[in-house]
Length: 361
Image (cartoon, rainbow, N blue to C red; front, side, top):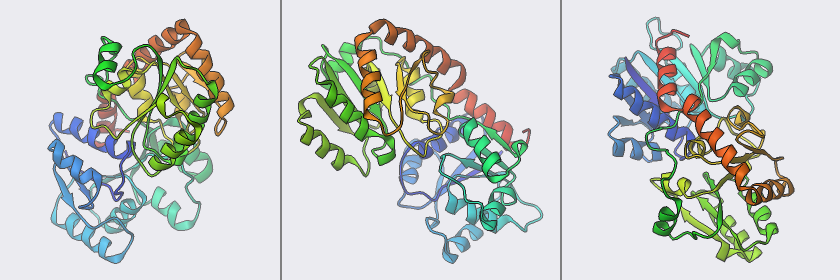
């Protein structure tokens, strides 16, 4: 198949990483894949670096010049499938192709759990502007059905798949810690996420500070709009010597491998966070919230603990439970790895997306 991914977002996070990972998987299966995105977007730069064909289009805003650019490109190139990812590019593609008799199959991937408005134009986009919708979690699919009336048979949940050949448990945590400058004699609590407010860094940091222990260390991997605010919070709490913030990492695997506990206290906008599934493949116990489709991979009491949103007290209690109980951490870690290998891999995601692209679903 000839597949086009469109992405109007210039940001960086799980959505863009999924599109790149999926594209690589489709190329490995012999399909031709192109990503259309703004020239200054993070995904454009990353696609070229990975050897994925990418074309720069001025599609970051909903305006006539963007619509014209998309129309010209789609008119000049033949594709079997167009997979849209953000609101703006979905509108541009659907408007360009809506009245064409012979057009590619349009698949919309819905990555986030933010509310979809029930106005007439948005309902047209979701019901008529595409042929099929993929959600990154079953809860997102059910919400689109119950809140927006989109037929269940028009949607399928395909969680983001993680490359199980890269994300593997550590052979020796202490060697990795020494190499990256992390303490070998402490329990390391970690979070890997773009530093956005809804990821809940604030609550994790407050909970960690309240523990007031010398045998623990906090690792915050990632960058984003909240980076300076997080640094300031850590400084004001007087825990800078107990926290490491290495920023954005091109290879996050060793940073996950050296953790003992993975904590993501998100309070909004999630599908199934890739960070959680990556941590599970690295054989880690999980602490997180009931947001989006997180409970499709976090099974409380089996691979981790559930905490309330915006509630540092329950986060503190969960951290304390796992810091104090190495046997429970080990039990949760085993389940994490087994479940992730069976349900959260790149191979499974690409296989399921291929079926959708062919119209088999």
